[in-house]
Image (cartoon, rainbow, N blue to C red; front, side, top):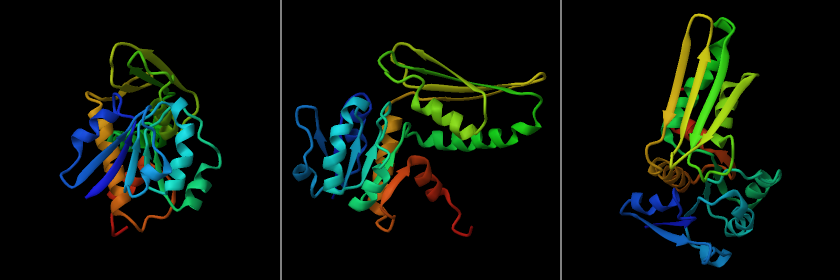
Amino acid sequence: MKKIALIGAGKTGSHVSRLTRTDEVVKEFTSTDKPTVKSLMGLDAAIIFVPGDAAEELIAPLLKAGIPSVWGTTGFAWPADLPERVKVSGSRWVLASNFSLGMSLVRRCLQLIGKGSSILDDPTFLIHEVHHKDKKDKPSGTAIKWEEWLGLPDVQISSKREGDVKGIHTLQVKTRFETITLKHEAHDRAVFARGALWAARYLIETPNLMSGVYSFESLVDRELMDPHE
């Protein structure tokens, strides 16, 4: 039986327990029942969905517990020495702004568009993102990732906050003669919980993965890698 800590059972984290398999059990921690090194010991992994202002105090106990940790925290400036601290602890951490597995396929499309932009006629690139009204960071971490994946200068990003939108990201590439539009829309926050669970399972089931900090995308790439390459 795999034992997974869930730290932050809010809008996204609350879906984790509902998506577990029969061989998994989730131990929930809240703001009034915070995780300690002792309470984390013996667990196989942790999934953390807390806002940026709550992340700092969780780093130390998770490092000391030494369990694989999957972080869905955005709007937080991670310490520059975090990769070294995680490596020294012998643990494996995954940091991501978006745990949608479908988004990893979008990433590949964005990378292709960025590489192929040289054949287009004076293109302009606009990324627009829409999220729920309570989301604090602007632009979203995913929109920043889209810009990074494009790998191009002068990409414009615009943001909108309204209602309970789970997440809509759109890239519009305009030239004199054509427009290219790429869109990803999350219909249910369960998609992010599912991806975080996938990452936690990957860390648990891949014990030979070296200690350190990984991106969600790098794990997906490892999974999709052709063994003959």
